[in-house]
Amino acid sequence: MQCWNLVISLAKDLLKVHRKSLALVLSMEAVTPNGYGGREKSMLLPNILFWMGGAAILLSNRKQDKRIAKYELQHLVRTHIDSDNQAYQYVFQQPDEAGHVGVSLSWALLHVAVKARRNNMSALGPLVLPYAEQLRYGWPLCYLEAKGRVMKGNPVWQIAFGSGFKCNSAVWKCISDIDPTERNAWSDRVDSYPVNEIPNATF
Image 1 (tube, rainbow, N blue to C red):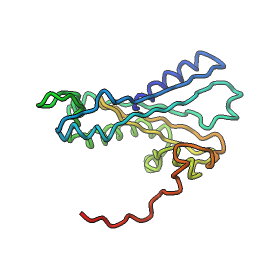
Image 2 (cartoon, rainbow, N blue to C red; image 1 turned 45 degrees about the vertical axis):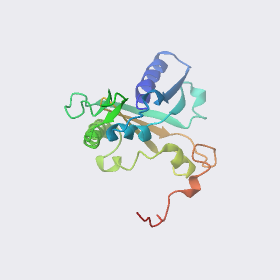
Image 3 (cartoon, helix red, strand yellow; image 1 turned 90 degrees about the vertical axis):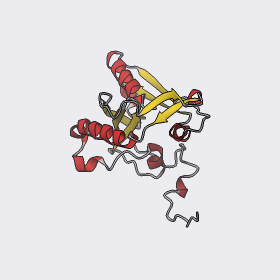
Image 4 (tube, rainbow, N blue to C red; image 1 turned 180 degrees about the vertical axis):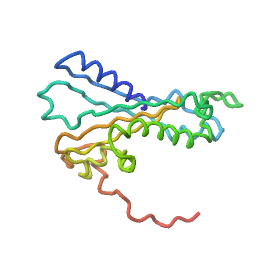
């Protein structure tokens, strides 16, 4: 769902010109058409990395909504490294030798992702934090809320990667007291994490 940054950026711009308004942003990742049924290893991996998902956020520029809002958008940063030769075709949809169409991931993926993140953090860093502090942020937000680790005034860094290759960041500021007992995606299992012991495995 790496395009959420672009959509939130558009919603932010619309709210600048439409006063006293709300913007509902829906983001979905539907990968069912790209399910791969062949045997090529580099094309099987996306079957387990990507799945159906979705998220929604309601943005407002109305003053009366500030008392019920959880977060305030501070910064949006979107960086591309599509001109990098190594990024070209790191993820590519194509048929395998048997004619099964799938998405192929290159071994360069990790290097490309690190480079994209570095570029994104270089652009974002001066806006928010000293470099040494930047790596403290980016955990799943619902988990942190359910653990009671998000406090009023805290910055929250959301980061996502996408083909192209692109890296998107949004920095939010928590502007309300988060109730860790409020139901969210982690509510029924948050007490099971972090896992303190990993049982010995035999192979």
